[in-house]
Amino acid sequence: MYRTPEEMSIVIKTPEEIEKMRVAGRLASEVLDYIEPHVRPGVSTAELDRLCHNYMVNVQGCIPAPLNYAPPGYRPYPKSICASVNRQVCHGVPGDKALKKGDIVNLDITVIKDGWHGDTSRMFIVGGEGSIQARRLCAVTYECLWIGIAQARPGAHLGDIGHAIQRHAESNGFSVVREFCGHGIGSKFHEEPQVLHYGRPGTGPELRPGMIFTIEPMINAGKAAISELPDGWTIVTKDRSLSAQWEHTVLVGETGPEVLTLSAGAPAKPKLQG
Ligand code: MF3
Ligand code: CO
Ligand code: CO
Image (tube, rainbow, N blue to C red; front, side, top):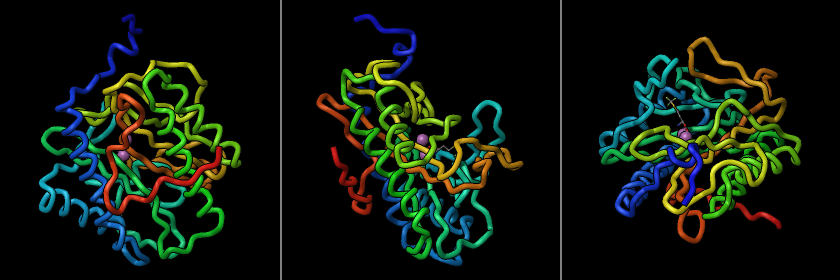
């Protein structure tokens, strides 16, 4: 069947590979289950990084994919997880500053197990008590993730995912970060395709069973514009508004999406109308 050049470079995983991706995905989600009770006022993100690193390496027998990861144009990433607090959009480098009550923090975990990657992130509200805006931003971003996931069926197009996410974010008065996107994933951390979190329905490659990619919308309470901190990694909102992100690794199954990064402690799928 005819495939565009863009579609040609998307790897279709075999049943054996898919099984390994299920294992890696569950393990990544279990790191978040493990760390959740530690996300409390007074803890630093460097401490959360240390705990996750030890859990991945010593308990799970996994490799933390971020550590020393160096895509073209980047210096090697210095830590084992990403921890993005408040106005930090993504790729926050863990540090010694203590979290305080009401902060919102995204923890992004990528493990390598048996050569295969699982990539997932969640938002945490420190001390359980965020502002109304912070809670609404985290909730709407979580809905955006699952609205995107629902589009990942055979015969749909990649642009359907971005369109659905953008519509939900913007109809709630929030904005979608444009510079970073979801990605194919497998034996490599970042593969084709790029999964934009905005776009037009019916555009982009057609989705086929066996494709695996992440969906990881970054949604800002204010404007979409971002800047990079001098550490060369941490991305922040230009207008200093709050930003939230949730991520799952998703398989396009024969009959619809299969979320690979689930575990006992993963939050339930949101109830959405329509
Ligand atoms: N986990 C991030 C993602 O979802 C990538 C982080 S790259 C790192 O794609 F080097 F910062 F870890
Ligand atoms: Co990712
Ligand atoms: Co990630």
